[in-house]
Image (cartoon, rainbow, N blue to C red; front, side, top):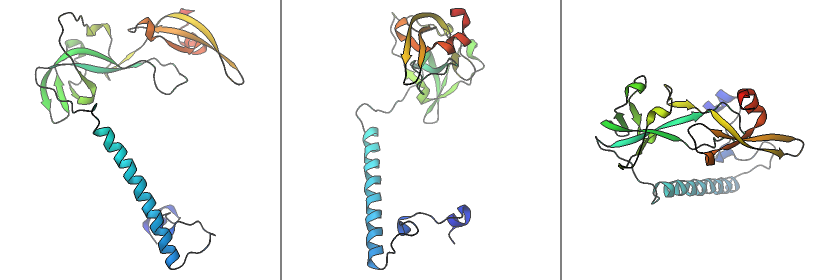
Length: 206
């Protein structure tokens, strides 16, 4: 028997044996013709998927990101609030701290940064996906100490106050919602959260 059948105790569903058990038998040229059609169909779908992914990579907006030693970059950090939301993806945009100077290029996609003493417990080599180019401007006033970053480059978002309330009506129930303004974010970046979750976690707001 095939290794797949020995491991999973059932036959492998491949284009060579496409039909289910109990279907009409395929003999001779009929089997070859149907198998060839299935293989051709699979190849066409794979080629379409590959072409679509290639178009994303070759897009005009996508360009390789390379930094030089001495450049200044922002470092990406991840907020977390511990509040269960309706959506799976967080509503607050990723934040960046810095800027920090690049000391050395480590390999093709990693860089060593000059971190301040407050971040001495964080490893100073980061993947290029965590960096964002900083264009110097004398009018910029930047301070990384305003965000208390943890060892894993995350920080806790704390609510400042409740701006508004509303009731969200579903099919079988009504859920009370509150509009929360979060620390380190502007009032227009406030998010709607379940009042029950906010009341349990931050009762001092009520």
